[in-house]
Length: 369
Image (cartoon, rainbow, N blue to C red; front, side, top):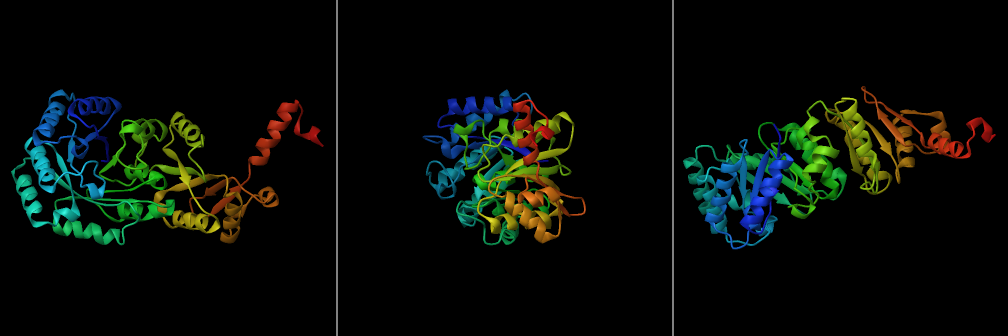
């Protein structure tokens, strides 16, 4: 199961309580209490918030307590001892998970204290996290292995900033190649699709904020966007994927239109915004990455500016099918991947343009001659 987890990033307990209520009402399956956002932080403050969640929850809502190091994305710089005290306090209060940085866990003193607290907890688990805000990890597979070597019972969390959508494939590959509980996705606008596909590929959690103001990382979607726009509740390992390839892509209405149609027709399909920046080389690399990973189950794309000619060239070079009229036009806007991995491409732009013109003039297409 992938838990839809909502971070609580308030500066004080009252606002944190309000965020918790809003998150649960919106459908959060897990809460992450980001203690590093709380001003004048104390262990008692965190224990009280945990107790409040446990008392008010109609259904049990698992909690992660995190007090992030400033160097790894923390909001307020708190000393390591206090941060560890907070995690231990959370475990004593009955939380299900605490998140601590793998790099800092290697410190003997911190490791000893956390291990002892976990041994005294009836259900507490450790998430060991590694973040790279600049770009990909040098070797994500090796890092995953090292985390488990240090603490085999831990849940590895590997999160990095994607500078291009092609950077996401390391994260997707990591989820595909590994098993068990692990958390892997990318940050930033270019990493958005990895947050959505985390559920399809079995990441232990994916994160979504209550709203844009309470987001705790770049590229974090809101829980409403994830559920309403991207059909989060319907995603499973068999979900077929489609998308619009463009730059820019954030303005496109295509995901809203297609996903609404898929939902209405009860189809196990998901349509994604695919920000493919750059020119032909970047476009070609993206499509090659898709074609090499049949397990992603991409079946087709809408293609728009600036890649309509790039798509035509790619299919021509790949020996795929090109609609004769699309070849004559010199651009395509629709790309299909068949079940045997072949490419077919078409242009429907001309039909839409002609229909708009003839409808506006009140004539048939033949009358244009």
